[in-house]
Length: 527
Image (cartoon, rainbow, N blue to C red; front, side):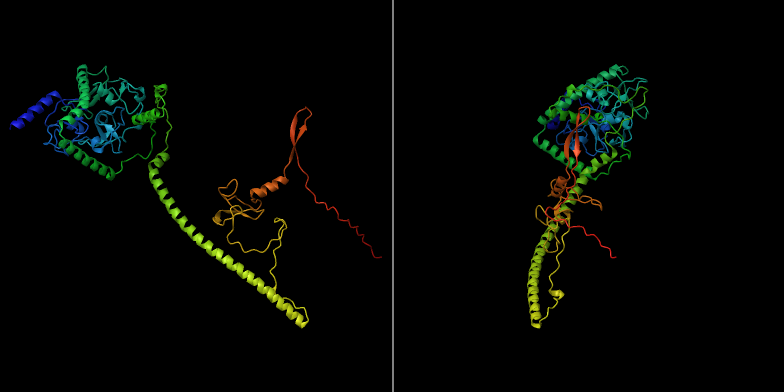
Protein backbone atom coordinates (compact mmCIF):
# COMPACT_ATOMS: atom_id res chain seq x y z
CA UNK A 1 0.00 0.00 0.00
CA UNK A 2 2.83 2.38 0.79
CA UNK A 3 4.39 1.69 -2.63
CA UNK A 4 1.11 2.47 -4.42
CA UNK A 5 0.68 5.66 -2.39
CA UNK A 6 4.21 6.75 -3.24
CA UNK A 7 3.61 6.18 -6.97
CA UNK A 8 0.37 8.16 -6.86
CA UNK A 9 2.09 11.06 -5.10
CA UNK A 10 4.89 11.06 -7.67
CA UNK A 11 2.36 11.06 -10.49
CA UNK A 12 0.34 13.90 -8.93
CA UNK A 13 3.48 16.00 -8.55
CA UNK A 14 4.47 15.21 -12.15
CA UNK A 15 1.01 16.20 -13.35
CA UNK A 16 1.26 19.53 -11.57
CA UNK A 17 4.65 20.19 -13.14
CA UNK A 18 3.50 19.33 -16.70
CA UNK A 19 -0.08 20.23 -17.58
CA UNK A 20 -1.03 18.38 -20.76
CA UNK A 21 -2.47 20.55 -23.55
CA UNK A 22 -4.40 19.31 -26.58
CA UNK A 23 -2.66 20.22 -29.83
CA UNK A 24 -6.00 20.55 -31.66
CA UNK A 25 -8.21 22.71 -29.44
CA UNK A 26 -5.37 24.01 -27.18
CA UNK A 27 -7.47 23.08 -24.14
CA UNK A 28 -6.02 21.75 -20.90
CA UNK A 29 -9.18 20.18 -19.42
CA UNK A 30 -8.80 16.41 -19.14
CA UNK A 31 -11.98 14.64 -18.03
CA UNK A 32 -12.81 10.98 -17.71
CA UNK A 33 -15.07 11.04 -20.77
CA UNK A 34 -12.55 12.99 -22.87
CA UNK A 35 -9.04 12.69 -21.50
CA UNK A 36 -5.84 14.02 -22.99
CA UNK A 37 -3.66 11.15 -24.21
CA UNK A 38 -0.04 11.25 -25.24
CA UNK A 39 1.78 9.41 -28.02
CA UNK A 40 4.45 7.13 -26.56
CA UNK A 41 6.72 7.69 -29.57
CA UNK A 42 6.61 11.39 -30.52
CA UNK A 43 5.15 12.70 -27.23
CA UNK A 44 2.34 14.74 -28.79
CA UNK A 45 -0.81 15.24 -26.68
CA UNK A 46 -4.42 15.37 -27.86
CA UNK A 47 -7.96 14.90 -26.60
CA UNK A 48 -9.56 11.56 -27.39
CA UNK A 49 -12.56 13.33 -28.92
CA UNK A 50 -10.42 15.77 -30.91
CA UNK A 51 -8.47 12.91 -32.52
CA UNK A 52 -11.27 10.38 -32.81
CA UNK A 53 -9.73 7.62 -30.68
CA UNK A 54 -11.90 4.57 -31.28
CA UNK A 55 -10.87 2.59 -28.22
CA UNK A 56 -8.65 0.18 -30.13
CA UNK A 57 -6.34 0.19 -27.10
CA UNK A 58 -7.25 0.19 -23.41
CA UNK A 59 -4.98 3.13 -22.69
CA UNK A 60 -6.61 6.22 -21.19
CA UNK A 61 -3.36 8.00 -20.48
CA UNK A 62 -0.30 6.11 -21.62
CA UNK A 63 2.08 8.14 -19.49
CA UNK A 64 0.24 7.41 -16.23
CA UNK A 65 2.18 4.25 -15.48
CA UNK A 66 4.86 2.09 -17.03
CA UNK A 67 3.10 -1.27 -16.70
CA UNK A 68 -0.60 -0.69 -16.03
CA UNK A 69 -1.57 0.72 -19.45
CA UNK A 70 -1.09 -0.22 -23.09
CA UNK A 71 1.12 2.10 -25.21
CA UNK A 72 -0.74 4.46 -27.55
CA UNK A 73 0.62 5.95 -30.78
CA UNK A 74 -0.66 8.52 -33.26
CA UNK A 75 -1.37 7.52 -36.86
CA UNK A 76 1.87 9.00 -38.22
CA UNK A 77 3.97 6.99 -35.73
CA UNK A 78 2.01 3.84 -36.51
CA UNK A 79 2.84 4.23 -40.20
CA UNK A 80 6.44 5.21 -39.49
CA UNK A 81 6.42 8.38 -41.62
CA UNK A 82 7.32 12.03 -41.18
CA UNK A 83 4.23 13.59 -42.76
CA UNK A 84 3.79 16.88 -44.55
CA UNK A 85 0.39 18.57 -44.56
CA UNK A 86 -1.31 19.12 -47.91
CA UNK A 87 -3.31 22.11 -46.63
CA UNK A 88 -0.63 24.19 -44.88
CA UNK A 89 3.19 24.58 -44.77
CA UNK A 90 3.62 23.89 -41.02
CA UNK A 91 5.07 20.56 -39.91
CA UNK A 92 4.15 20.58 -36.21
CA UNK A 93 0.96 19.08 -34.82
CA UNK A 94 -0.89 15.80 -35.17
CA UNK A 95 -1.87 14.31 -38.52
CA UNK A 96 -4.48 12.11 -40.16
CA UNK A 97 -4.05 10.11 -43.35
CA UNK A 98 -6.21 10.75 -46.40
CA UNK A 99 -7.82 8.08 -48.55
CA UNK A 100 -5.17 8.76 -51.24
CA UNK A 101 -2.23 8.15 -48.87
CA UNK A 102 -1.49 11.84 -48.18
CA UNK A 103 -1.41 13.50 -44.75
CA UNK A 104 -3.17 16.55 -43.29
CA UNK A 105 -3.38 18.16 -39.88
CA UNK A 106 -6.52 17.14 -38.06
CA UNK A 107 -7.11 20.81 -37.21
CA UNK A 108 -6.75 21.75 -40.91
CA UNK A 109 -9.25 19.07 -41.88
CA UNK A 110 -11.74 20.41 -39.33
CA UNK A 111 -11.53 24.09 -40.29
CA UNK A 112 -11.04 24.00 -44.09
CA UNK A 113 -14.42 23.95 -45.90
CA UNK A 114 -14.95 21.04 -48.29
CA UNK A 115 -12.84 18.48 -46.41
CA UNK A 116 -14.85 15.38 -45.47
CA UNK A 117 -14.33 12.33 -43.25
CA UNK A 118 -15.20 8.76 -44.10
CA UNK A 119 -16.06 7.99 -40.46
CA UNK A 120 -17.11 11.04 -38.43
CA UNK A 121 -16.62 9.32 -35.06
CA UNK A 122 -13.08 8.12 -35.84
CA UNK A 123 -12.28 11.17 -38.04
CA UNK A 124 -10.75 9.00 -40.75
CA UNK A 125 -10.07 8.66 -43.58
CA UNK A 126 -9.86 12.28 -44.72
CA UNK A 127 -11.22 12.99 -48.20
CA UNK A 128 -9.92 15.97 -50.20
CA UNK A 129 -11.55 15.20 -53.54
CA UNK A 130 -14.77 17.05 -52.66
CA UNK A 131 -12.87 20.31 -52.19
CA UNK A 132 -12.42 22.56 -55.21
CA UNK A 133 -8.85 22.41 -56.53
CA UNK A 134 -8.93 26.12 -57.35
CA UNK A 135 -8.49 26.84 -53.63
CA UNK A 136 -4.90 25.57 -53.67
CA UNK A 137 -2.62 28.60 -53.78
CA UNK A 138 -5.55 30.95 -54.49
CA UNK A 139 -4.95 33.25 -51.51
CA UNK A 140 -1.88 34.45 -49.65
CA UNK A 141 -1.49 33.84 -45.93
CA UNK A 142 -1.05 37.05 -43.94
CA UNK A 143 0.74 35.29 -41.04
CA UNK A 144 3.43 33.27 -42.88
CA UNK A 145 6.91 34.56 -42.15
CA UNK A 146 8.45 32.98 -45.26
CA UNK A 147 6.83 34.47 -48.40
CA UNK A 148 7.74 31.34 -50.38
CA UNK A 149 5.21 29.34 -48.34
CA UNK A 150 2.52 32.03 -48.17
CA UNK A 151 0.65 30.62 -51.19
CA UNK A 152 1.00 26.94 -50.36
CA UNK A 153 -1.94 24.82 -49.31
CA UNK A 154 -5.38 26.30 -48.71
CA UNK A 155 -6.08 29.56 -46.86
CA UNK A 156 -9.32 30.23 -45.01
CA UNK A 157 -10.93 33.63 -44.56
CA UNK A 158 -12.02 35.49 -41.46
CA UNK A 159 -15.61 34.65 -40.48
CA UNK A 160 -16.35 38.22 -39.42
CA UNK A 161 -18.60 39.50 -42.18
CA UNK A 162 -16.83 41.20 -45.09
CA UNK A 163 -13.31 40.84 -43.68
CA UNK A 164 -10.76 39.97 -46.37
CA UNK A 165 -8.05 38.51 -44.15
CA UNK A 166 -6.77 35.10 -45.29
CA UNK A 167 -4.51 32.73 -43.38
CA UNK A 168 -3.59 29.08 -42.94
CA UNK A 169 -5.37 27.15 -40.21
CA UNK A 170 -2.18 26.27 -38.33
CA UNK A 171 -0.90 29.85 -38.70
CA UNK A 172 -4.14 31.05 -37.11
CA UNK A 173 -3.75 28.43 -34.39
CA UNK A 174 -0.33 29.84 -33.53
CA UNK A 175 -1.91 33.25 -33.02
CA UNK A 176 -4.83 31.82 -31.00
CA UNK A 177 -7.45 32.82 -33.58
CA UNK A 178 -9.37 29.53 -33.80
CA UNK A 179 -12.56 29.06 -31.83
CA UNK A 180 -15.23 26.41 -31.49
CA UNK A 181 -18.90 26.72 -30.63
CA UNK A 182 -20.17 25.25 -27.39
CA UNK A 183 -21.53 21.72 -27.36
CA UNK A 184 -24.98 22.99 -26.36
CA UNK A 185 -25.30 24.99 -29.57
CA UNK A 186 -26.67 22.91 -32.43
CA UNK A 187 -24.62 24.22 -35.38
CA UNK A 188 -23.73 22.30 -38.52
CA UNK A 189 -20.23 23.82 -38.70
CA UNK A 190 -19.14 24.71 -35.14
CA UNK A 191 -15.60 25.80 -36.10
CA UNK A 192 -14.82 29.50 -36.55
CA UNK A 193 -11.68 31.50 -37.32
CA UNK A 194 -11.21 35.24 -36.85
CA UNK A 195 -8.41 37.64 -37.68
CA UNK A 196 -6.54 39.64 -35.05
CA UNK A 197 -8.95 42.57 -35.31
CA UNK A 198 -12.13 40.53 -34.81
CA UNK A 199 -10.91 37.86 -32.35
CA UNK A 200 -11.58 38.03 -28.61
CA UNK A 201 -8.44 39.32 -26.91
CA UNK A 202 -8.75 37.29 -23.72
CA UNK A 203 -9.54 34.09 -25.59
CA UNK A 204 -6.68 34.73 -27.97
CA UNK A 205 -4.28 35.45 -25.12
CA UNK A 206 -4.75 32.17 -23.23
CA UNK A 207 -4.75 30.11 -26.45
CA UNK A 208 -1.53 31.77 -27.51
CA UNK A 209 -0.07 31.00 -24.09
CA UNK A 210 -1.17 27.36 -24.26
CA UNK A 211 0.29 27.00 -27.76
CA UNK A 212 3.72 28.25 -26.63
CA UNK A 213 3.58 25.97 -23.58
CA UNK A 214 2.64 23.04 -25.81
CA UNK A 215 5.62 23.64 -28.10
CA UNK A 216 8.08 23.84 -25.22
CA UNK A 217 6.59 20.75 -23.55
CA UNK A 218 6.74 18.64 -26.74
CA UNK A 219 10.43 19.44 -27.11
CA UNK A 220 11.27 18.56 -23.49
CA UNK A 221 8.91 15.62 -22.96
CA UNK A 222 10.77 13.15 -25.18
CA UNK A 223 14.09 13.69 -23.42
CA UNK A 224 12.50 13.44 -19.96
CA UNK A 225 10.51 10.32 -20.86
CA UNK A 226 13.63 8.56 -22.14
CA UNK A 227 15.31 9.26 -18.81
CA UNK A 228 12.33 8.16 -16.70
CA UNK A 229 11.43 4.97 -18.58
CA UNK A 230 13.26 1.77 -17.74
CA UNK A 231 14.88 -0.30 -20.52
CA UNK A 232 12.17 -2.96 -20.17
CA UNK A 233 9.39 -0.41 -20.62
CA UNK A 234 11.16 1.18 -23.61
CA UNK A 235 11.61 -2.26 -25.20
CA UNK A 236 7.91 -3.01 -24.66
CA UNK A 237 6.94 0.28 -26.33
CA UNK A 238 9.26 -0.36 -29.30
CA UNK A 239 7.93 -3.90 -29.77
CA UNK A 240 4.34 -2.66 -29.72
CA UNK A 241 5.23 0.11 -32.19
CA UNK A 242 6.72 -2.43 -34.62
CA UNK A 243 3.52 -4.46 -34.43
CA UNK A 244 1.44 -1.39 -35.26
CA UNK A 245 3.71 -0.53 -38.21
CA UNK A 246 3.50 -4.05 -39.62
CA UNK A 247 -0.28 -3.92 -39.28
CA UNK A 248 -0.40 -0.50 -40.99
CA UNK A 249 1.78 -1.74 -43.86
CA UNK A 250 -0.52 -4.72 -44.40
CA UNK A 251 -3.59 -2.48 -44.31
CA UNK A 252 -2.00 -0.11 -46.85
CA UNK A 253 -1.45 -2.91 -49.35
CA UNK A 254 -4.92 -4.42 -48.94
CA UNK A 255 -7.09 -1.31 -48.75
CA UNK A 256 -9.20 -0.43 -51.81
CA UNK A 257 -8.04 2.23 -54.20
CA UNK A 258 -9.34 5.72 -53.49
CA UNK A 259 -11.83 7.33 -55.83
CA UNK A 260 -10.20 9.80 -58.19
CA UNK A 261 -12.16 12.21 -60.39
CA UNK A 262 -12.02 11.33 -64.06
CA UNK A 263 -11.12 14.85 -65.13
CA UNK A 264 -7.59 15.84 -64.13
CA UNK A 265 -7.50 19.40 -62.82
CA UNK A 266 -4.32 21.50 -62.91
CA UNK A 267 -2.73 22.49 -59.63
CA UNK A 268 0.30 24.82 -59.41
CA UNK A 269 3.44 23.14 -58.18
CA UNK A 270 4.13 26.15 -55.95
CA UNK A 271 0.95 25.39 -53.97
CA UNK A 272 2.54 22.29 -52.43
CA UNK A 273 4.74 22.97 -49.40
CA UNK A 274 6.44 19.56 -49.65
CA UNK A 275 7.35 20.22 -53.31
CA UNK A 276 8.84 23.62 -52.42
CA UNK A 277 10.91 22.05 -49.63
CA UNK A 278 12.24 19.41 -52.01
CA UNK A 279 13.10 22.04 -54.61
CA UNK A 280 14.85 24.15 -51.98
CA UNK A 281 16.78 21.09 -50.83
CA UNK A 282 17.78 20.35 -54.40
CA UNK A 283 18.93 23.96 -54.88
CA UNK A 284 20.95 23.70 -51.68
CA UNK A 285 22.66 20.52 -52.86
CA UNK A 286 23.40 22.15 -56.22
CA UNK A 287 24.89 25.21 -54.51
CA UNK A 288 22.19 27.62 -55.71
CA UNK A 289 21.04 30.34 -53.34
CA UNK A 290 17.26 30.74 -53.33
CA UNK A 291 17.47 34.19 -51.71
CA UNK A 292 18.50 35.89 -54.96
CA UNK A 293 15.27 34.92 -56.72
CA UNK A 294 12.43 37.40 -56.15
CA UNK A 295 9.13 36.06 -54.82
CA UNK A 296 6.06 36.99 -56.83
CA UNK A 297 3.58 38.27 -54.27
CA UNK A 298 1.05 39.52 -56.79
CA UNK A 299 -2.32 37.84 -56.93
CA UNK A 300 -1.85 35.84 -60.10
CA UNK A 301 -5.03 33.87 -59.57
CA UNK A 302 -7.41 36.72 -60.35
CA UNK A 303 -7.60 39.31 -63.08
CA UNK A 304 -8.70 42.93 -63.03
CA UNK A 305 -12.39 42.17 -63.34
CA UNK A 306 -12.26 39.63 -60.50
CA UNK A 307 -12.61 36.54 -62.65
CA UNK A 308 -10.10 33.76 -62.33
CA UNK A 309 -7.51 33.42 -65.07
CA UNK A 310 -7.30 30.22 -67.04
CA UNK A 311 -4.22 28.16 -66.20
CA UNK A 312 -2.87 25.65 -68.60
CA UNK A 313 -2.10 22.34 -66.87
CA UNK A 314 1.61 21.84 -66.46
CA UNK A 315 1.15 18.07 -66.66
CA UNK A 316 -1.46 16.60 -68.96
CA UNK A 317 -3.76 13.78 -67.91
CA UNK A 318 -1.99 11.38 -70.25
CA UNK A 319 1.39 12.19 -68.71
CA UNK A 320 0.03 11.77 -65.18
CA UNK A 321 -1.43 8.37 -66.08
CA UNK A 322 1.85 7.39 -67.71
CA UNK A 323 3.84 8.56 -64.67
CA UNK A 324 1.67 6.54 -62.31
CA UNK A 325 1.84 3.42 -64.47
CA UNK A 326 5.45 3.69 -65.62
CA UNK A 327 6.72 1.21 -63.03
CA UNK A 328 4.34 -1.43 -64.33
CA UNK A 329 5.28 -0.50 -67.87
CA UNK A 330 8.97 -0.82 -67.09
CA UNK A 331 8.44 -4.25 -65.52
CA UNK A 332 6.47 -5.40 -68.57
CA UNK A 333 9.12 -4.02 -70.93
CA UNK A 334 11.89 -5.77 -69.00
CA UNK A 335 9.98 -9.06 -69.08
CA UNK A 336 9.39 -8.68 -72.82
CA UNK A 337 13.06 -7.88 -73.38
CA UNK A 338 14.12 -10.95 -71.40
CA UNK A 339 11.69 -13.11 -73.37
CA UNK A 340 12.87 -11.70 -76.69
CA UNK A 341 16.49 -12.22 -75.65
CA UNK A 342 15.81 -15.88 -74.89
CA UNK A 343 14.12 -16.28 -78.27
CA UNK A 344 17.08 -14.57 -79.94
CA UNK A 345 19.56 -16.90 -78.22
CA UNK A 346 17.58 -19.94 -79.35
CA UNK A 347 17.41 -18.66 -82.93
CA UNK A 348 21.14 -17.90 -82.94
CA UNK A 349 21.90 -21.44 -81.77
CA UNK A 350 19.65 -22.85 -84.48
CA UNK A 351 21.30 -20.54 -87.01
CA UNK A 352 24.76 -21.78 -86.05
CA UNK A 353 23.64 -25.39 -86.46
CA UNK A 354 22.11 -24.59 -89.84
CA UNK A 355 25.32 -22.82 -90.89
CA UNK A 356 27.35 -25.90 -90.02
CA UNK A 357 24.98 -28.12 -92.00
CA UNK A 358 24.98 -25.62 -94.85
CA UNK A 359 28.79 -25.62 -95.02
CA UNK A 360 28.83 -29.41 -95.04
CA UNK A 361 26.28 -29.51 -97.85
CA UNK A 362 28.27 -26.93 -99.82
CA UNK A 363 31.43 -29.03 -99.46
CA UNK A 364 29.62 -32.19 -100.53
CA UNK A 365 28.04 -30.31 -103.45
CA UNK A 366 31.44 -29.07 -104.56
CA UNK A 367 32.85 -32.60 -104.39
CA UNK A 368 29.93 -33.90 -106.43
CA UNK A 369 30.45 -31.17 -109.02
CA UNK A 370 34.15 -32.00 -109.29
CA UNK A 371 33.32 -35.69 -109.64
CA UNK A 372 30.68 -34.83 -112.22
CA UNK A 373 33.25 -32.82 -114.20
CA UNK A 374 35.72 -35.72 -114.15
CA UNK A 375 33.06 -38.20 -115.26
CA UNK A 376 31.94 -35.81 -118.02
CA UNK A 377 35.50 -35.52 -119.31
CA UNK A 378 35.91 -39.30 -119.26
CA UNK A 379 32.56 -39.73 -121.04
CA UNK A 380 33.56 -37.20 -123.70
CA UNK A 381 36.85 -39.06 -124.22
CA UNK A 382 35.06 -42.40 -124.56
CA UNK A 383 32.52 -40.84 -126.96
CA UNK A 384 35.33 -39.40 -129.11
CA UNK A 385 37.04 -42.82 -129.12
CA UNK A 386 33.84 -44.46 -130.37
CA UNK A 387 33.64 -41.86 -133.15
CA UNK A 388 37.17 -42.63 -134.26
CA UNK A 389 36.44 -46.36 -134.24
CA UNK A 390 33.35 -45.90 -136.37
CA UNK A 391 35.04 -43.32 -138.52
CA UNK A 392 32.31 -40.77 -138.14
CA UNK A 393 31.93 -37.65 -136.09
CA UNK A 394 29.24 -38.32 -133.56
CA UNK A 395 27.15 -35.64 -131.91
CA UNK A 396 27.88 -35.35 -128.23
CA UNK A 397 24.78 -36.16 -126.17
CA UNK A 398 23.32 -33.51 -123.90
CA UNK A 399 24.35 -35.35 -120.75
CA UNK A 400 28.03 -35.08 -121.73
CA UNK A 401 27.91 -31.44 -122.74
CA UNK A 402 29.42 -28.81 -120.48
CA UNK A 403 26.90 -26.42 -118.86
CA UNK A 404 26.48 -23.12 -120.63
CA UNK A 405 28.09 -20.14 -118.97
CA UNK A 406 25.90 -17.16 -118.17
CA UNK A 407 26.60 -14.11 -120.30
CA UNK A 408 27.73 -11.14 -118.21
CA UNK A 409 25.53 -8.07 -118.26
CA UNK A 410 26.65 -4.54 -119.03
CA UNK A 411 26.27 -3.49 -115.39
CA UNK A 412 28.74 -6.18 -114.39
CA UNK A 413 31.39 -4.63 -116.62
CA UNK A 414 31.38 -7.34 -119.26
CA UNK A 415 33.74 -9.58 -117.28
CA UNK A 416 33.03 -13.27 -117.41
CA UNK A 417 32.29 -14.96 -114.14
CA UNK A 418 32.78 -18.58 -113.40
CA UNK A 419 29.79 -20.65 -112.46
CA UNK A 420 29.52 -20.68 -108.68
CA UNK A 421 27.24 -22.40 -106.25
CA UNK A 422 23.74 -21.04 -105.80
CA UNK A 423 23.98 -18.48 -103.02
CA UNK A 424 21.44 -19.62 -100.46
CA UNK A 425 23.24 -17.65 -97.72
CA UNK A 426 24.74 -14.38 -98.86
CA UNK A 427 27.91 -13.01 -97.32
CA UNK A 428 28.60 -9.38 -96.47
CA UNK A 429 31.02 -7.64 -98.82
CA UNK A 430 32.78 -5.93 -95.89
CA UNK A 431 32.88 -8.33 -92.93
CA UNK A 432 32.67 -11.47 -95.14
CA UNK A 433 30.19 -13.08 -92.72
CA UNK A 434 26.82 -14.59 -93.50
CA UNK A 435 24.97 -13.94 -90.23
CA UNK A 436 21.87 -11.72 -89.96
CA UNK A 437 20.56 -12.47 -93.43
CA UNK A 438 17.56 -10.20 -92.86
CA UNK A 439 19.91 -7.21 -92.46
CA UNK A 440 21.76 -7.73 -95.76
CA UNK A 441 21.23 -5.07 -98.41
CA UNK A 442 21.88 -5.70 -102.11
CA UNK A 443 23.75 -3.10 -104.15
CA UNK A 444 22.11 -2.74 -107.56
CA UNK A 445 25.44 -1.80 -109.19
CA UNK A 446 28.08 -4.23 -107.93
CA UNK A 447 25.55 -6.93 -106.93
CA UNK A 448 27.16 -7.39 -103.52
CA UNK A 449 25.37 -7.67 -100.20
CA UNK A 450 26.20 -5.50 -97.18
CA UNK A 451 25.07 -5.48 -93.57
CA UNK A 452 23.29 -2.29 -92.54
CA UNK A 453 25.70 -1.84 -89.63
CA UNK A 454 28.81 -2.45 -91.75
CA UNK A 455 28.09 0.46 -94.09
CA UNK A 456 29.76 3.84 -93.60
CA UNK A 457 27.68 5.61 -92.39
CA UNK A 458 25.56 2.73 -91.03
CA UNK A 459 21.87 2.58 -91.91
CA UNK A 460 19.06 2.06 -89.41
CA UNK A 461 16.53 0.63 -91.85
CA UNK A 462 16.26 -0.74 -95.35
CA UNK A 463 16.16 1.96 -98.07
CA UNK A 464 12.96 2.25 -100.01
CA UNK A 465 13.25 1.01 -103.59
CA UNK A 466 10.88 1.65 -106.48
CA UNK A 467 10.77 0.77 -110.15
CA UNK A 468 12.48 4.02 -111.13
CA UNK A 469 15.06 4.15 -108.32
CA UNK A 470 17.74 1.84 -107.04
CA UNK A 471 20.31 1.73 -104.25
CA UNK A 472 24.06 1.49 -104.55
CA UNK A 473 26.86 1.30 -102.01
CA UNK A 474 29.17 4.19 -101.20
CA UNK A 475 32.01 2.89 -103.40
CA UNK A 476 29.76 2.61 -106.43
CA UNK A 477 28.22 5.98 -105.62
CA UNK A 478 31.65 7.66 -105.45
CA UNK A 479 32.73 6.01 -108.68
CA UNK A 480 29.56 7.18 -110.43
CA UNK A 481 29.63 10.69 -109.00
CA UNK A 482 33.26 11.29 -110.04
CA UNK A 483 32.24 11.02 -113.70
CA UNK A 484 29.38 13.48 -113.23
CA UNK A 485 31.29 16.19 -111.35
CA UNK A 486 31.15 19.69 -112.71
CA UNK A 487 34.03 22.09 -112.64
CA UNK A 488 33.50 25.40 -110.90
CA UNK A 489 34.71 28.44 -112.81
CA UNK A 490 34.52 32.13 -112.11
CA UNK A 491 32.49 34.31 -114.46
CA UNK A 492 32.96 38.09 -114.54
CA UNK A 493 29.77 40.08 -114.77
CA UNK A 494 29.48 43.44 -116.60
CA UNK A 495 29.52 45.36 -113.30
CA UNK A 496 32.88 43.87 -112.34
CA UNK A 497 31.65 41.33 -109.81
CA UNK A 498 32.42 37.65 -110.10
CA UNK A 499 30.22 34.65 -109.63
CA UNK A 500 30.74 30.93 -109.86
CA UNK A 501 29.63 29.23 -113.04
CA UNK A 502 29.20 25.52 -113.51
CA UNK A 503 30.88 24.03 -116.54
CA UNK A 504 29.30 20.74 -117.42
CA UNK A 505 31.60 18.28 -119.12
CA UNK A 506 30.66 16.89 -122.46
CA UNK A 507 30.04 13.15 -122.62
CA UNK A 508 33.17 11.15 -123.30
CA UNK A 509 32.92 9.63 -126.77
CA UNK A 510 34.74 6.48 -127.79
CA UNK A 511 36.73 7.07 -130.98
CA UNK A 512 38.81 4.15 -132.30
CA UNK A 513 42.35 5.19 -133.27
CA UNK A 514 43.85 2.66 -135.73
CA UNK A 515 40.74 1.39 -137.43
CA UNK A 516 40.72 1.99 -141.22
CA UNK A 517 37.59 3.52 -142.55
CA UNK A 518 35.70 1.35 -145.02
CA UNK A 519 34.58 2.95 -148.31
CA UNK A 520 30.90 3.42 -148.70
CA UNK A 521 29.23 0.90 -150.96
CA UNK A 522 27.30 2.46 -153.81
CA UNK A 523 24.37 0.36 -154.89
CA UNK A 524 24.35 -0.46 -158.66
CA UNK A 525 21.08 -0.57 -160.43
CA UNK A 526 20.46 -3.34 -162.91
CA UNK A 527 19.50 -1.99 -166.26
